[in-house]
Length: 240
Image 1 (cartoon, rainbow, N blue to C red):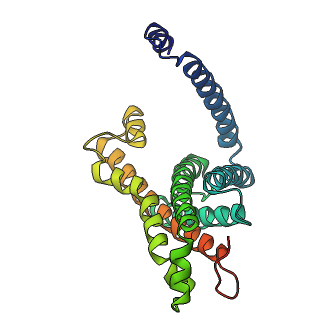
Image 2 (cartoon, rainbow, N blue to C red; image 1 turned 90 degrees about the vertical axis):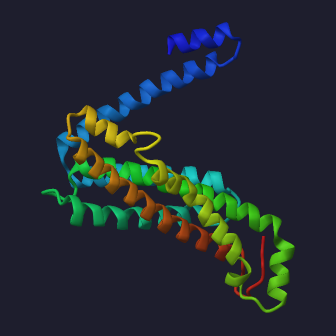
């Protein structure tokens, strides 16, 4: 990083400040996370594990909500609920039926899986939600025309919702299309560096890709459904 900062200064890119700040935050944040995880792994307490997951979920929901909109009422609990349901169903299936550790709260499995799923669900929810809100705000006349012709609210916004969900799923679908061909994912690389057999590392990565696809789809379905409902009152009228 010192060489990268020096190169930026030499080429007058004015990235020295950002690179220095990013370097410091990376070291500080990951060291703090390392110490926290070391404590959680040593305690092996289900309560501590759930508390940590709760903090991760709340952080993901706040970040996604801020990306979507701060003006829509009750958006934070809506986003948090969507991420929670999508991630919980995915993690329950994976932990109970696939990995099957001795304890369901085994930190070595639950926390890394939850971190990956929550992070991707957060991004999918933010992209789909932001796309949908932006489209709804700019398409009021078209939506009201559909409503005046007898369309139900779900029919009037069906195309916008579908496009938003597709946008939220683009990242994971693209990753699945080229995984192992263009790049080796971080989990697989970590397994290989840790001494795991290549086929075992590949099996873990396949599992994770399938987890992310399912969690992202469930999360975007729930988020877009909730946002669409916020845009209509009990009389099926469009509100801003």
